[in-house]
Structure formats: structure tokens, C-alpha cells
Length: 244
Image (tube, rainbow, N blue to C red):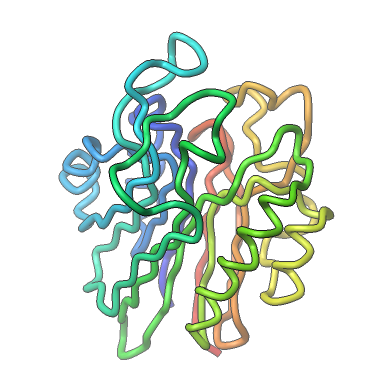
């Protein structure tokens, strides 16, 4: 069994609360979305985890408001366990220099990626993959999302067993989330109606959107799955994951 977490951490905006939360949870594996590359040494030092990173965009100016972080953003996998069989795949972009983020041009200036690694604990293997999926306004569905989902599922399909997590930018009950749920088991308990933090997310009080996910193939069982507020602008997902 591994102790598992997945969090969209909104750059360096909530570092203290993220680190405090993870120190208490003591994960074996953490998947991050919107992590800044410069924060990797801090997480490694404070949590005793080894970090792996995939860049997706660069914020050279504060894109949304005065608290918006700047730096090279990406997805990350951190673990205190040895990580092997690493693969880094882009399903949108990924060619040339990391693009500079331009508000209103997210499809062109943010790459989309899947990071996969295998960890071992107590002679059991766990194949973990994290992503930050294509964004649309207000949880709508776009043709770009449909196109990117096909590419994502093709990459993920290379792995017969998988723990797939991340910020999917598509609400449960909608087309994209439902397609993922047909392929993998959705482990987020039904009582959670939103994964946006009501106090910390820009639209958290305005709209309920269950956009963060923890999906598994039949080789895995996720128990004690929880969403926790007060960590970042997205709620932190935690679980205990064992093999069947």
C-alpha cells in the first residue's frame, strides 16, 4: 500500500500550507500540477522526497492578478520511493522552447503533458501518472479537449495498469470526465461536488466544479479517498492505494 496525494498547488502561492499538509499526511508519492520548477529543491528539502518535473509553460509576468506566481510551470511527481520506468509525453505541444504564457491564448501557449513513473514498496509495483489537462472556461467542453483527450488516452493506453491523477479541467458529469470514467475507475467519493477550494480559488464560491480526478485500472484499490480544503486553490486529493 502507498500513501498517495495529488494537488494543483497554484505555483508558489500556497507553499506553506501545501508543505504543512504533506508533512502531516506523510505521502509515499505526490503528483503536483502548476508547480514552479524553482520550488523543487524546497519540496525535496522539506518533505524528503525526490522530485521529477515536466515544463508546460512560462509565466514571465503575473497573468491574472497581483498574487499570480511567475516562473516555469509544469507537472511534477515526487516520491520517497525509488522511481523507475519514467516516461514523459506531451499530447499537446512539446516541441521547441517552453512557451511564454499569454492570457487568452492558452491552447497555443500551454503544453499538455503526462508524466509516468513506477514506484515499488513492499515488493509491489505502482504505476503512477499525472497530468494537467486542457482548460476551457466554466467547465465547458471544446473540440480541442476532445482532440487532446484522444491523444492522452492513446499515451495512457500503453500502460496496462495505471493510477492516473491530476487537474482535468473538465467537471464530473461532463463529456470529458465521463469518457475517462468509462476507461478507468473514478475514485473520488460521490459526496464531493467540487474540487475547487471555496476560499482560495477565484471562482470557488461562485461555481461547483469537480475537476480533479483519481482514476485507476482494476489492478489497484483506492481507499480512504479524501479532498481537503485550505491547502491550495484546488482541494488536495489523498488516498491509500493498494494492489488487488
